Length: 311
Image 1 (cartoon, rainbow, N blue to C red):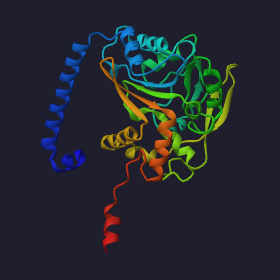
Image 2: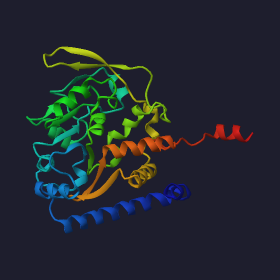
Image 3: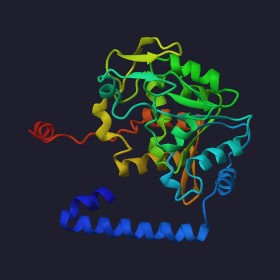
């Protein structure tokens, strides 16, 4: 319905309506912030515990600091709150992807990934976590993780060896098989990379998401030597149809995940968080894919195809 309204309204009307809507959202967010009070490490930990996170948790965290409002202490407070909740017996895994563009285009620049030095492109929370002295940083050249906790070394070692960032042995695969969970903390839920796991699991996935063959990536080892290794790469041509840019389609996918018991939504700080059960999400996505429903909005028939069909 929202897309239909957008198509019917002329641009001269859509633009001011969009500005008015954004202004209203900012005012609502400001009012919510005043009511809830300051965001601190303690208040974040309280919010995280209230949503059901617990000590000993195995958790992948996608995050956005700006999505939580103004946090006293910044990213350090967010990282601290997460560790307070899961405890030393829990395992936190945070994606610290090296990519600043689609993997195909990034690898075409012939970069060298160095786990000790290559910064995360996914925001300050991940980069702050990566730089911790007690964090382990994985060796996957395009989709590395930083981790902390009793399972981190084992999971990240296997993830770093995989040709596909989402295949068997990947961190996403490990968390699903071990019954872990996924958290989008102040971050839009389509940024949860585990949505791609089903694309590896189902041989008859409805969309051709991978480029044929592999590309070569360079990785610097601890001793300083550089090794070349194969990496499987997603097809960037699907980008314009992904649910992270097709917002109405994202809502459709979210509604389906809710209906199938895979996700809950919570207030955290001055923002929102989405908590996924990794197994429930995978079951939901597999069932949806068999029904022809994926994170890629179906392409609209071209005019040529439409004309040919009607001829």
